[in-house]
Structure formats: C-alpha cells, structure tokens
Length: 389
Image (cartoon, rainbow, N blue to C red; front, side):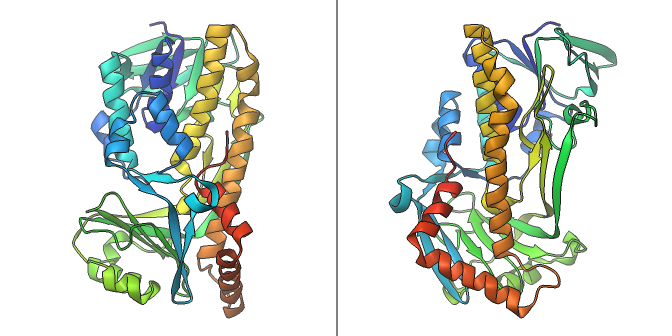
C-alpha cells in the first residue's frame, strides 16, 4: 500500500490530523492497535480550548460540539471554606467549551467515515522502518497476514505507550519527567452538576474537582493515594470524602447517585524532545503528558496537530519544508508553557505527602492573592483558555 502520510493511532490526535489532511487533499491512512469500540470506550476529560474548537470546525466536525457542548465563561476556586469565580470572558474575552473527549472522538470517526478515508483497526505488531530516509515504511500484522505501507511521512499519534516514540533512538531523545505522589479517583454519575462551572477545591484533606459532561451528567474527582484501589472506594465513601472537601453551598447542591464508571488516574508531567526524527513526527501523548489539573491534555494534542497539519500542507501545496523543519521547536514552545501551567495548578491545589500546616497556609495565601489580583486572574485565564499558537 502507498500513501502520503501514515498515521499511527486513532485517538483524537490521529483522527483530527487525518481529517484535516483529507479535507485538504493529502492522502493518509490511520493504523490503530485496538478496535473502534475500545477507542470510544476511553473515558477522558472534556474541556475544549477556543483554539481546539476552531480546529474541529476547520476539520468539519464541530457542529455537534457547538450544539451540545456547554460554553463556560470561567471556573471557581474553592479554599478556606469559600468559593471564588475567575471570569475568563470578562478578563480576556474568551471562553472554553465542556464537551467530552469521547464525543469528539465519535465526531471525528464519523467525519472520517463520511470522507471515505481509511482506518485500519486491530493492526498488530506495528513497526516503523527507514524513518530517516526518503521512503519510510510501516509494517503491521492483520487477519493472519503481514502488510506494509510505504509513505512520505509518519505521524506518531499512538500515545505514551505506543511504538512511535520507542522507534526513536535513545541517543536522539531526551526525556523530562515528574511523577506526582498521588492520583485522582474519579466517578461518572447521571446527576446534574454541582455548579454551572467547574469547581477546583484546595483542602487540607486533599484536592477535589466537580466537573460535568452535560447538564445531567457529572464527573467528580478527589485526590487519593497511589496505593488506593478502586474497589476500596464505595460510592458512599467517595461522596462522604468529597463533601468534606467542598464548601457548604456546594455540598447542599451535590446530588448523589450510583456511579457507572470509577477509576484512579496517576498524575505525571512528561516531555520527550525532539518531536521529530527524520520523517517521523510525534504528536499528543506520544510526546508529552500533563497532569489533568490544567485541562491541557486534549488541547495540547490538538495544538501539535495544528502545527503538523500546516507543516505538511505547506510541504505538499507550496513545496516548502520550513514548517516540517520547524515543527518540533514550534510545538515544544507551546508544550512547555502548558506543562508549566499544569504543574503550577497541580502544585497549588493538591496536598503533597509530608507537607506541613505552613505549606497549606502558603497554598491558601497564594490562592487568596490570585483571586484578589486582576493581573494574576488574567494570567490564569489566558493560560486556561489556551495561549495563542
């Protein structure tokens, strides 16, 4: 098989890149190790930056997001028993959209099917070859036979555990990582949200977050130990702990219900540099991970895709390699700013093992300064809704 761009991974990054390339006449094939149903079953966050929303519109798949997504003009920070609102729209004139990543993936899958573009699911033993040459190849096994795709470029959108980053020699890549000593225990429940906007709570017992997927479905989190097991947390125990960390007004609005999804997610900050090796490009979680506190994971993947799509379009339509040559530096400049913001939010809102009462007071004082300073609130707002490309 011959194509222009072979995309590894059918998550949001791979699907979005494929959709953008297809709409601009650039042939591409997506390879995915799992089934389509498995990909759709992944539960992920759903805060969409304005830039990401614009990119989904460019890909022709934004209609349902605008119809069903929840436009949020701000967030609320809870600490010392009180809540304080950060009004993004008043501060910087921009907002975010709450729309589940699962729904974005579904929209992209449907858009790709409508365009007649090819996605190969259940592709086993994927391997990348000759990525530093002019004719890279991707090999895989499916339906009892070995297959090969010859291409001009390979886009590695296959996540942290995928084959793409592992195909770059250790002598080329440099890894930066911080693993946080706690996780997030999250549940999905069919009950109305606690608040019209997200509540981020700092408490001496640990962080909590009240989020949502719709007007009738809530996503709730509490900070937990990495030693905890999901089966140790009944719904009753979860709600009891969540209520301890929220202010009284939020507790009064909390509607308890049976969870239909419950999981523990570890937190880490991770970056691999560079994001290009020959004709192989990394995008999304294949190159970087952020803790979910700043709502940057999906949006950073979309940011990478924007740079890569434009670079490939310039190569094919304008015969220019400038975008390709500058891809890694451009993407990483934005990645590191998002890493900083996510690290800062995580450090400010969570209770770290071994922290003292003094450390808790410092967190509360930083939060008190933040909500009293227009400059500080503006800085948070412009980072949360997404820095310019």
